[in-house]
Amino acid sequence: MKALVCELCSSNDIVKQDGFYVCQHCGTKYSPEEAKKLMVEGVVKIDTSDELANLYQIARRAKEDLNAESAAKYYDMIQVKDPTSWEAAFYSVYFKAMNCTIAEMESAAISVSNCIDSVLELIKDHIEEKAEQIEAVNTVAAECIGISSFLYKGAKKHYNEIDISIRHKFASEMNSRCLAAKDILCTLGNSIDAVFNDYPELHATAVEAWKQSIDRLNYLATDYTAEGKAAANKLMTMYASKIQNYEPSYSPPLYGDKETSSGSSGGGCYVATAVYGSYDCPQVWTLRRYRDDTLAETWYGRAFIHTYYAISPTLVKWFGKTAWFQNLWRGKLDRWVRELNDRGVEDTPYQDRNW
Image 1: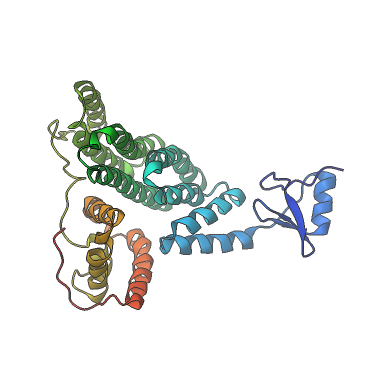
Image 2 (image 1 turned 90 degrees about the horizontal axis):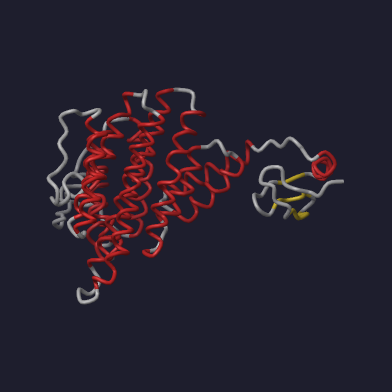
């Protein structure tokens, strides 16, 4: 008779609980009859559809509530039971990266870059409808652009807040973190170009990823040595060439210029305005108050604000009127606004601070 090993995750840490044999790694339950069959034959067919539906519901709720720790946990569990899920493969990595510390920024960015190609392959192989594939790729792209900017801006802001007398000691760490965050965009553009090259609808998404990576590298290169600037210039030329395959008239920014499309700031609540249809409405007033009175009080809150203004105009320009964009953000914003109102954040007319 064989040892009792979980068929789904191959763990042998199985404990009898309340009349069932329960895998302590993935939570799969076996009846006594199933456990006996598993030990004798080494295989048993298990229907996990109900359990998967529950896990997706919990994971998506955590995602909408921006609960990074819970979302990562439940998407990890989904991956074990449904290894073909692009959603679980991406968001299990994405939310771990969102929850990283300053010291973990570089490894977090690398983990996101490393998962992009396999996630896009899952979308291509396991989603049948082309329209759904395009929507899924654009969702991944929007999330990648967001987290890339968040990590990049966070690394720069942390560095700039170090005492100037010792800041030079941390320049190498800052550069490594920023480059890793920038690489998310390069990988995104390259992977879309490779996996979905025959989808003209996605060419603009790849191009925008490359453009933003050039902007960030160009900005960062102003702090490099001569050798570093030469290497950065070579990379910018390479990605400009990729862009010109789809936009022949594209000209990269002048070498050494500060950020252009990815570094702008100012303006209003672009995503919320696109979702609610007005910059002056109770929901957007609530969010603007929260931004100025709460987020702006911490370094990571300020990093989020500047990240938001770096990427949201582009996202709204691309996708603001599409159904998938509205669906992606409406639930999140509705929950967020209700929670803020419950905390006492007012929804009356409001005058912004200058961002």
